[in-house]
Image 1: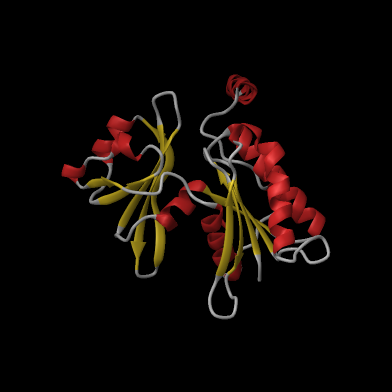
Image 2: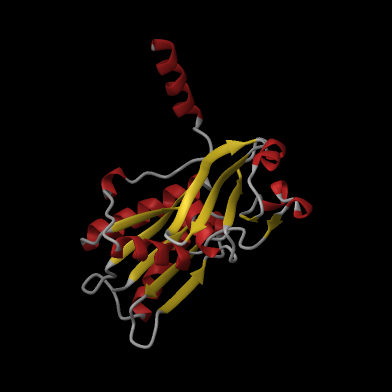
Amino acid sequence: MIVLGIETAGPHGSVALLEPDAPGGARVTQTVLTATRQLGAELAPTIQRMLRAAGLGPRRPPDLVAVDTGPGSYTGLRIGLAAAKGLAFAWGRPLMGVPCVDALEAMAPPGERVVCALDASRGQVYAATFLRTPEGVVREQGPDLHDPAILRQALPRPAAVVGDAASLIADDAAGLVAADPPWPTAERVAALAYARFARGERQDALRLCPIYFHLNEAEEQRRKRGMRVG
């Protein structure tokens, strides 16, 4: 199986091709996108070049498309998800979305507990806590928006803190230790999507939506109108 991974929610997007069951061990190629302000113009050509180099294309497409569903950059999320959906539909291939915090947890250093914290602006962090058990990884808390000072006091510890807001809630003396990475990669998104797909998980590509830190203005107005009607 070959998985195309797309990550465009972070400050530096990336694209990866992963062959997890290749003879001799998993093979992966990854390209980091550089023109972050022109992501829409750079993403498609990058994917085309990677596919061509791997001998892939419309007649021999990847077997699975994976995409980071966020939260993160509003524009980047929409561009990445639109590209992933378009390719999956055009190729007739399944699509798997991976939340950013899940991919971050999978990249965190060894340890029993991991906190994934993202800068949600407006003085808030978006955080989720994961507990690693012998039976697998369990999402212990969140994800939710928090005031970083309040969250720091409430978090269970010890824990490794990853994500681009790790420094806002880390407290080494109290057992909350900041660690890499600040953001997941397309390679990790592809690997996690493959693992879930191999376990039998499936997603409805039509219903797959990005996760946002905050509602945009139009969505917030609709929410408020709905509350008044109720």
